[in-house]
Length: 96
Image: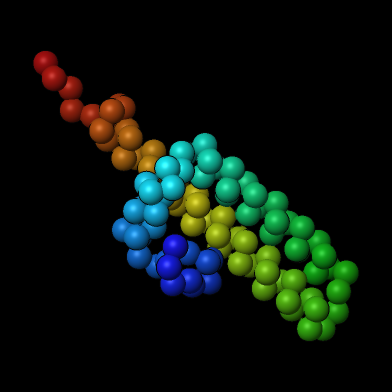
């Protein structure tokens, strides 16, 4: 996914969508990736509670990275669902 930022994904949403289409990632797979990132953030937060100093800071930075990644996957899922609803779902134009 090219250039990385704090959540490990390219900042250009168009490139992210191109990557998702090329990799053929389904919405339920995006949900699984968001859940994975949430669980990893929780684990690193718990590890950080038992560390001190630089190790605690490192654990908190890793947890933040996973929280940002989770938020990005959720944002992408919402966008995919809205695109689907606008094209085929309840917001689609009806032919009468």
